[in-house]
Length: 245
Ligand SMILES: Cc1cc2nc3c(=O)[nH]c(=O)nc-3n(C[C@H](O)[C@H](O)[C@H](O)COP(=O)(O)O)c2cc1C
Image (cartoon, rainbow, N blue to C red; front, side, top):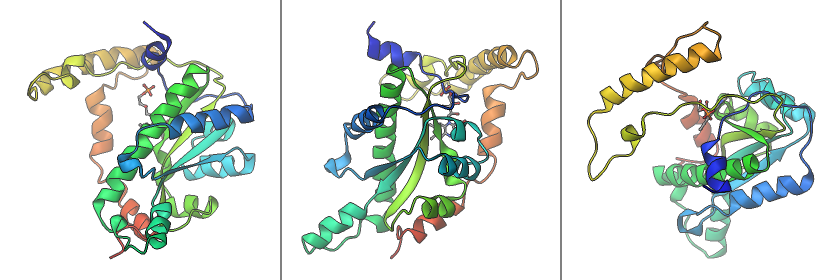
C-alpha cells in the first residue's frame, strides 16, 4: 500500500531493548511529530518529558510496576495532560480559570495526549524503533510527579518507551473487524464476535508461550476489568489541582 499504512498495520509492542541511546535529533523529531497531532481548540494541553538519564529510568521502571525494559530502552517519554499553560493564559488575559474543575479537562487532555502519543508511535516505528505505552505510570502518580518535578495543573497520564529492539514480537491479532467496524448503527452481535476472537487468541497464546498458556481475550480482559481500577488516580489529580472546587 504505502509506508505509513504498512507501519501502522505492522505495529506490535516491544518489551526487550538494547541498552543504546537514541540520537538527539531523533528525540526532537519524535516530539515534533507528536506535537503535530490535532488538538482540541488548539489548546495543546500536552507536555512530553523525555527521560534518558539511566538512574531516573531505573526509578521509573520500578515505579511503573517493575517493568524492567523501561530501564533498558533508550528513552522514556512521560506524556502529561498540561493545563498550567492554560492557567497562565487566563491570568495574562484577566480571565477566571475553571476548566480543570470539570471532567472536560481530563477528557480533552487525555484525548489530546493519546493522539500525540500515537503520532509518536507511528513515527518511531517508521524509523525502526520499538515502542510500548506504559499505563504503569499511574501506579504511583505522586512519586512520578515528584521525580519529574511536575507542577500543579499538570498530570502524567501515560508513558511511552522508545528504543532499539533486542527481539521482535509477533503482531497481536485484533477483534474481528466487524466487531469494531459497524455500519449505520451499532451491531449487537458482539458476543458472537468475542467467541470468534477468543478462539483466535487461544491459538495465538499457545504459539507465543509454546503451549504453556491458552488464555483467551475474555479471560485476560476480565482479570483487568473485575477489579475496581486505580482509585488513586482521582486523588492524585486532585493533588495537582484538578477537581479543586
Ligand atoms: C494506555 C496504554 C497503556 C499501556 N500500558 C502498558 C504497560 O504498562 N506495560 C506494557 O507492557 N504494555 C502496556 N500497554 C501495551 C498494551 O498491552 C498493548 O498495546 C496491547 O496488548 C496490544 O498489543 P500490541 O501493542 O503489541 O498490538 C499499554 C497500552 C496502552 C494503549
